[in-house]
Amino acid sequence: MLSEDVSWIRYLVGSVLTAIIFTAISGNVLVCWAICADRRLRKLGNLFIVSLAVADLLVSGIVMTFALANDLMGYWAFGPQFCDAWIAMDVMCSTASILNLCAISLDRFIHIKDPLRYCRWMSKRVVLAVIAAMWMLSAMVSFVPISLGWHRSFQSESIDEMIVVHTEGRVEIGSAPPEALVLESNGTLNWTELTFVTTSSMVSGTSTGSEVVTDLQRDLHQPKCEMDLTKEYAVSSSLISFCIPCMVMIALYCRLYFYARKHVKSIRALNKPLNGGAVQHQAHDHKAAVTLGIIVGVFLFCWVPFFAVNIAAPFCKTCIPEIVFKVLTWLGYFNSALNPIIYSIFNTEFRDAFRKIITTHFLVFSSCSQRDSIRSRHAQHQQQNNNSCNYVPANCNLLLPIHPNQNNQEPRILVKSPMVESCQV
Image 1 (cartoon, rainbow, N blue to C red):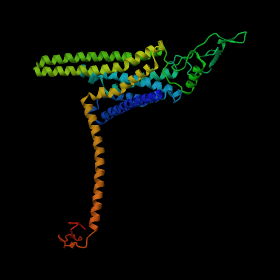
Image 2: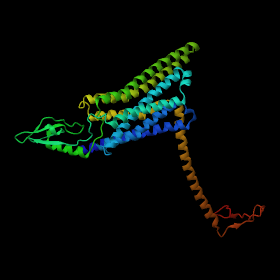
Image 3: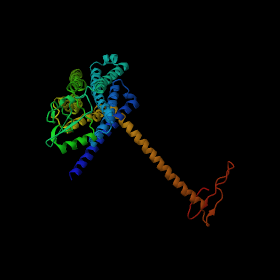
Image 4: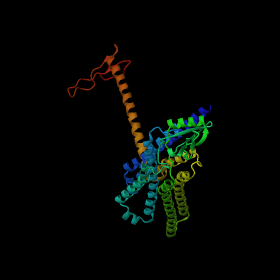
């Protein structure tokens, strides 16, 4: 009964996560498609949105897909080399996504605050250089230290030698250099120095022999792919990937919000609108506040818990359960599915482009299906007419041609019958 409940929960979680992955992939593909297809969206600022969509597309298509397989199977089945590549891809794409969010906020702030200076500064070369710099920084934070092994709390990825000592019905598992074992005069081994292996699933310390051997056999056949970060790498990568961009983005959006309110007040003072206009301006203020609140709030909601745990985990490995870390990781991944909605659907031009793409292709598919159906019905009707015209009953009255032969063509003969009123032969 318990195994059936666990299987049902696993299927439910797998279905929900698959739906999130599908939503993220389709949404980000639609963003790139809309910018390429619609001339109105081919703006310099939207290149940052394309870069954001590409980063989120890599997160959803590669990182989230293998994370789903890893979580559902309970072990990593793709080899240790690809494990490091997957972790590096996770860090790089998540960092690039956050940096692109920061670049979008900076682009919108300059565009609204000083549009004349924006046109002078923001050329296509500058935008592409900023995008390339963000991706290079993301790669330096991820692939360089991970390929050199700086991110792990222990240097060796696998245990070359394992010493199992049976003492009084107990099994102690650990790794130690050869000089740590001293052979005493009575023929027993004295364990002078022992470094226990600590992972999320391996039993460390002392336990019963059957439990340790069972867990050890399971871990040897079911390897794990988890981020066991050092304190230095966890703090430095979190500062570069999240903390600094987050503070910059919050500061820019706060300044942008107050500048927008000040700008609206100045317009009110110049135009002196009536009560209806004042109500309309208040509605615009409320909408702007809600939009900015959603943008900043969703971003903080998705990423703050993960990076808080990511920084605290190296300092206290046993304080955070594994299930909590996985839930917070997927919460950060979920931001990749929300970015197309937050940064694109709220824009009228993007919304119109999405509607045009979806309706056009739906209508093309529908028209093709309708055309095939009409052709099929027409063929069946033509076949029935041919069968009716080929059969002439005995009591048909053959009439003379109604129209004269103008172009030396064969005359048309009308056949009248109780069964067939008229047909062309």
